[in-house]
Structures are given as C-alpha cells and as structure tokens.
Amino acid sequence: IIGTSLFISVLSVNASVDPRIVPARKLYENYNLFARENKLDSIFWLMDTIESIYTRVKHYEHSFEVGVLYNNRAATCLSLLMNEEDVIVSDSLLRVADHAINNSITIYENWLMIYDGKSKHELEKDLEKDFFVGLGEYDLEDQQKFLHKRVKELIEAQVETKRRLSVSYTNLGLVYRHQLQYEAAALSYQKAIENWDRNLTAENNLNKLMGRPEKKRNLIQKLFPPERVEN
Image 1 (cartoon, rainbow, N blue to C red):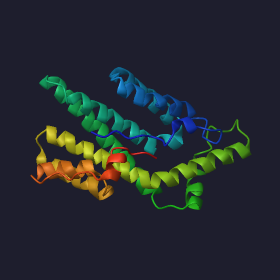
Image 2: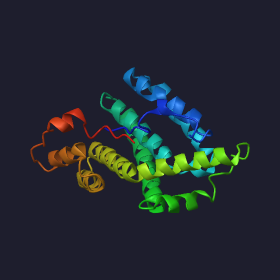
Image 3: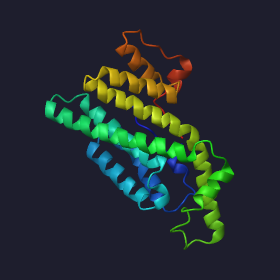
Image 4: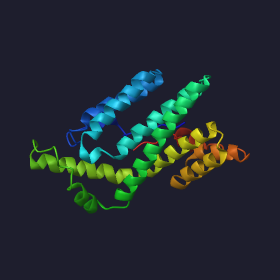
C-alpha cells in the first residue's frame, strides 16, 4: 500500500507560492501525524478539506495535487482493510479504494496529456488562460512571482506525476488481488512498472502473483525506498 507525498517540504511555503492554495499546503503538514497516530477520521476530514480548497480555484480543479489526495484516500482504505474481518466492511473499503484510485489515475493521465514534456515557455503560455483568475487583488509583480513558482512546480511534476501514476496502479493491483481478479492485478502491476521502473513494490507484488522469488532491496533502496514518492 503506497501513499504519495505532495511536496518536498510543505514547511517551505514562501511568499512566491500561490496564496489561494497556501492553506491547503499548511493543512497537509498534519497528514503524516494523523497517519502515524492512526487517526483515520481526521485523515479523511483532512483530505476533504484540502480538496475543497484546491477545487475552488479553476487552475487546480484537476491538478496533480487532487490526484494525490485521491490516492491517499485509497491508501488509507487499503490500510484499514489489512485488519478488517467483517466481509461487508471489507467490500465497502474496497469499493471506496477502487473509486478513489481510478479517480487518481484519470487525473494523473489527463494531467500528463496536458503538461508532460512542455517547456517553461509553453507552460507559461498555458497558464495565462486561467491561472490569474482570482488574483486581481495582487499587483502584477506578485502575480508573476506566483506564476513562475507554479511553472517550476509543474516542471518538477512532469517527472513525479509518472511516479505517482505508478503508485496508483500499484494500489489498484492490490484492490484486484483482494477481489481475486489476479489477471487484472498483474496488468495493473505491469502498468505501474511501465510508468516507474524502480517501483519495487509493484515488481514484487507481480512476482508473488507469478510465483517468482521477490527481489531484495539493495542498500540505496533501503535508505530511499520506492514508497517514498516525493516531489
């Protein structure tokens, strides 16, 4: 089960970050804390609250950040499933996880179709269409700072979103495995590996399905395991 992190350091929010979504980034600081303390209600409340902030701004409605939220919802459901013995509850968790994962995959794939491979100049031109809506209270210099910061984030996300997509396909494979749909699970793991060839979790889950020995992590992988998807 893999969740995805939204930022290298949410604490590094500075004056150049789009002020419309600063509250969401600050809220995200609580995610790891809630996860460590197993505060599941708080996690779902957090995801919903953060999503409501992003989706109020047109530019972020279908952003990679919203995809991360959906995958983390799914990861939480899959974590709950590990110790759940009630069949009805398990089925409900699987349905929620499946819905959230597929939403994240749709968002990531659509995002990559729009932004993947584009240059800084191309991204700036794209963002001029809707990015400044709602920033009228700021002067032009500040608006340009927000734009340049966002373009930098999008360039970084061109690589990271492929890894995030891989994570979502890995979790989808887990859903299929719980549903005893082994062929679909194998296909999901293969798609995960295609999007990120260092996804050892997907590789070993596929190895289990195929009756092959698991691949051990080397020292670097132990220090920086594939589950840590940062951006």
